[in-house]
Length: 451
Figure: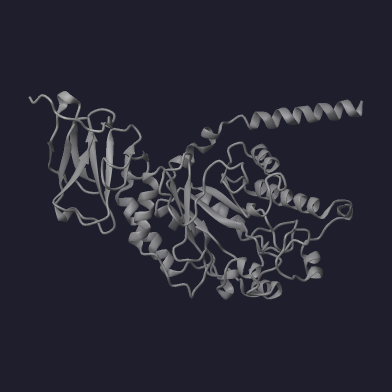
């Protein structure tokens, strides 16, 4: 009888999970495709000494013990998550992803499965993640949780490339008596699933941003079980590509892809060369470069996940805040050419990035240089209703040259672009069309009959 009851419960649970997973990938990804901008946050011990996050340990540039001692100065005394969230919202961000745990094992939330967290093992002495989630949700943005699959401080994790204090590790990761009946890897898998479950119980994230998957094969993590579990906990959740073979979208890093990816994607990028707070890293990208990269990304249908690394006390460095605000001013001015748009035309119709309105009746042309005498737009079959500068009321004059409509050759739209329309970072021109965009994609041929 007991076996039958257990079997029935298992069946009902399976049906419940299956029903929750019924949403298609496209349905789950719908909000992400129009998000355009996210803010990435790397925050942890590493900002205290201004060293590489986790990797300084991995490459033995600092001992595990010295790395962990940074927690004594990880104070978060000026941490103001509400101010963070208001800033991110003001620049046009639609989602925010913050490290809940990097490869070093430090959890920013109060985890019952580890003492290596911001409450028990840092001067902060409290849960830092819950107020972040509440603040982001309070500004109506999506919450993304960064979670490292590998944990280089867990006593049962392998491979490890550096010496550690094994006795200290066991105190940081307490285990029950029954754990001894499991293998080391089974104990780690159980721990990993427990922490992920804890994050979902606490926060129900909209997005999980995995990292570290390269250290093990998909069936070793195991990726399929993890993905199925996440969907059973939240059927709307989406996952980046760093869950071996089971991600929902691509996550290229630093360098924008040359070719347009064949599925949804985001570019994660630092402002300087470091992910965490690194005060000696002064190689900041200019605001103009960040705007240009953002434009190139959305023109290929992607999102930009722009990174900041707050200080150990919770402040955002002025250099980072300034760049966020500069990008935000540009987005606010040109929002119609950002949100509610889709990837633009193939290269050749216009020598620069483009996007289209969702109904494909407006072409947005982006110019990174000071406008010259005219701008050329080629191969557009539609009649033009109006051409204007986005962010102002200025209409632009234009004419069509070299057309041969009887041979289906639409000609070239010459748009006259005076210098006074120039934007500091990128000028945007809206070409309003009669009807949905139709393009001439021919190779050209002789005009055998003139009108």
